[in-house]
Image (tube, rainbow, N blue to C red; front, side, top):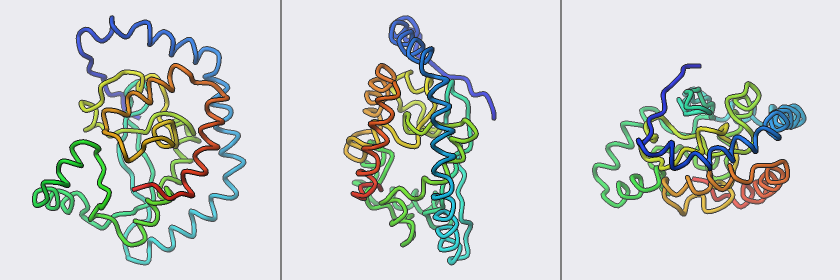
Length: 227
């Protein structure tokens, strides 16, 4: 795991100091317990999710490409880690995206605002299904197990998105497999607006909040609102 410095606005440290202190205070009492809960739930869910992942790996491999996709993401304290996902895109996906955005101004505006596309030309037929029901995220249970992520926390962002994120609470938390943003507006807010959800979570983090988010996640997944 590589260390990656966090750039801050010169006035950010002073302005946000009381808020950051509240984040640290919350984790003083819950941080260790949160990690133990993550490990326990992954251990309990593993026997169910592992066979499902194996089936999906077989189906993805039918098109001849790799089953897994690894991508650098920003973790707690700004460290870079490799996030695991089931592959949901065609080969040379980045080139396909660039070409699509260059020829579609509306898609370019949507991408610049949300860093996502409702109609993503990179998705395979199976990949669209995986994204819709968030099944492509299942390998991130490994990231939770080894400590890169938590079951509940901010949505992990890419290093290239750092300058688009107008807050600091993200860096005090482990990114989450699910979180307040994922169960709320999700695809109906801008990328920058995610910071409000991260701030809200950081101020209220507790076992009760995490449990409520996990329960709500189940209904959100079954509604198939992912993209």
